[in-house]
Image (tube, rainbow, N blue to C red):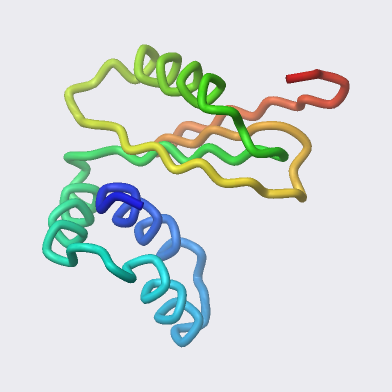
Length: 115
């Protein structure tokens, strides 16, 4: 996992109000083998809003071309100077796709759709 994605995952993890022990364990798992100086640099850029995090949650694992389509669409919508780091996660408890960038959230219900 690259350091930008690790920093973005840490930022998202921080917002989940986890027990501090669980947070520390999950953080350590994410950062295993990473260049911590780079992770800190990117995390700081995210906190200072110099870099945006796009959290994409889907009910199923997305194919790379599906991820590329989402990246292209989100990048066009948020035509900003800040770099956008994409974090893709599978969450079985949702029925579709959720994309969250900053304070913007888009939900797609994919019931009955085929990929």
